[in-house]
Image 1 (spheres, rainbow, N blue to C red):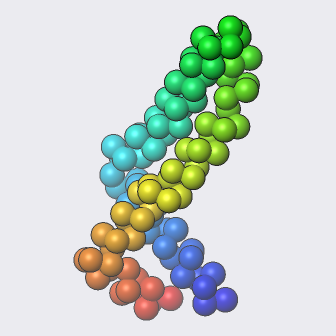
Image 2: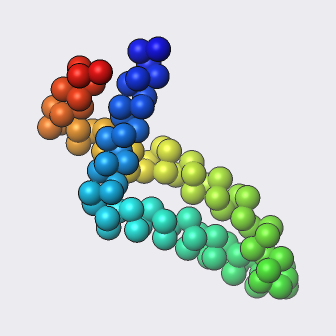
Length: 96
């Protein structure tokens, strides 16, 4: 149960920081869409497919790749690091 509360606390801080910094939230929504469009355009040109069919074929790999990028290198890691550097995360978790 302790890990669940800590996970929820970290998730709340990440969402709070994302909502506070609107610019990063916008970039987080633009990145997967731009990767999907880029991969779809490349696939459509190389395989001579229609854009609708190329989007359908490129969507799973593009979105999984974007999810892996965000989970490994995304803002969640930088947010947690920033919170620990400012020593706000440990104070926040101690209040649970």
